[in-house]
Length: 228
DNA sequence: ATGGTCAATGAGGGGC
DNA sequence: GCCCCTCATTGACCAT
Image 1 (cartoon, rainbow, N blue to C red):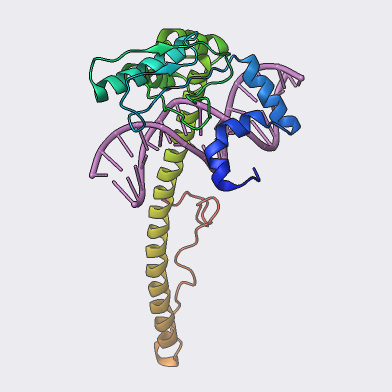
Image 2 (cartoon, rainbow, N blue to C red; image 1 turned 45 degrees about the vertical axis):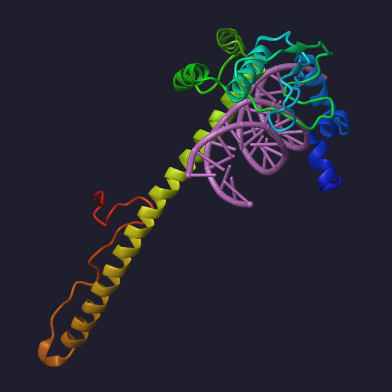
């Protein structure tokens, strides 16, 4: 996006949603509308105001109820058990906890139970079909979209972890090969010096030309048997 | 203050 | 052209 960074950051959500321009973004906008994305705005945050008033845009979806109640629980923890809640309905637009200015997104934290169930399902299959997604969403009182996002992010994390462990394996492999290469160079040096001495008329003898012949691609030695 | 985590977003691509 | 995916990124929240 090529707008002023400061303004852009402040207005990011609102801007990026309300100024869809390209073919692809229009398509995504349609997607978001058709999927009943929801808008949730929490009122004063703990930093903003001491008045314990919360405004919620929509409570029509279980997921929003869920994220809302999570936030409520968090606030309850922070400000004590006594507070009042004001709820007003607004048109459904998108997921995410954004106020009317589009600049106060509250982060949903999945409960321990929700995470455990999702994790459990992920272990069984890392992707979900429509039915599984819907069932899981209903079970966890989340939106199907949130379950989908969780699986997407979970797959991404798995991939990062896999890449990291692959890197470690390759690093170790590289160290071993470097070490081996060092040893072989020393061995070669020794053999060369022996050959030099042996080449003199008084100490003539046949030195085997090659001691190790391993195909770097298939790992076979020259006799066709597998090396190590 | 700062860095890590993770839910959410947007772009772009493939399959059908 | 819809649906679902990956990838890169954002931003709220949390621990230190």
